[in-house]
Length: 241
Ligand SMILES: [Zn+2]
Ligand SMILES: [Zn+2]
Image (tube, rainbow, N blue to C red; front, side, top):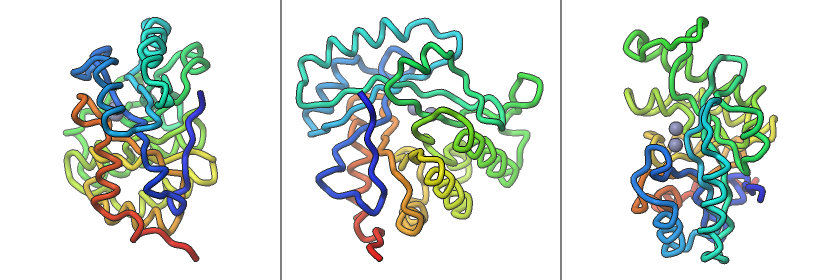
């Protein structure tokens, strides 16, 4: 199954019932596949993506996919995608994922989770000033949008935002523009977007394809991103000109 994204200015209350970012106890989430599906069903989610953390050497994807497929049979009203979340390992858009999983996953989220140095290691976040972290996170995201086979740039600016608050809006804008020209979606992350007014204002202006993702690590968090869009009255940020 393929993901479907709307351009921001085409979002409506009717096509908002999406959860494209979650984790189960297969990786660092708390709850089972079944529990996440039940939560999605209870909340009226119609398109759901399992997006576990993957690495190039992970060997569980096929077995996990089979388990999700089987569990999803009890929820015919939900389109269930089995994807992954992978991280950038350099500025050129290379990802920590095998070619095999890349070909089998329904949706690929590309994230910045660490700051790679040029020798295969990582630079501790504490070694970077806020300005340096914002800049390098932006460059890593840019590399993925330009060159990586991702469907979604997940939690843009999230590493910066979780330490210092709102990611600079000019970076959001450029990432949205790059997502748009490269036919990728940018995630509105209810977990990591600390300046939603800035993010949504930029969305209205640039009108990229938007992915809706709560980065839910437990069943209670499924649907949070949809809720945040409603709470912030996303329609007020849409432009129709
Ligand atoms: Zn992530
Ligand atoms: Zn995640």
